[in-house]
Image (tube, rainbow, N blue to C red):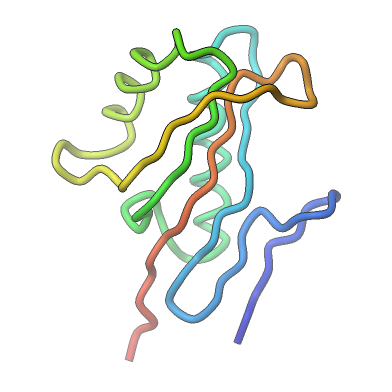
Length: 116
């Protein structure tokens, strides 16, 4: 069975397919990169909660940064949300965004076994 967490836009914030949760783009809001990345993680946590999962379930993320100079701050913030040695696999790249105020987006995959 496939379940979707819809958005008002042309994508789902998550699609649950079996034991996997495919996370669509998540972005945060705020004046600074630090505010936006913390807000992004809060949105990710809410989406995962709707799928009966948590950040502990996240196995892979792709972080899109507007400015590569934000990479050191991103590294620090990841330590706020994941235990040392329990980080998801990650790819980080830079890009421009349609929304000029957007400084980052995150998407990814979570693994959430179905109870037997």
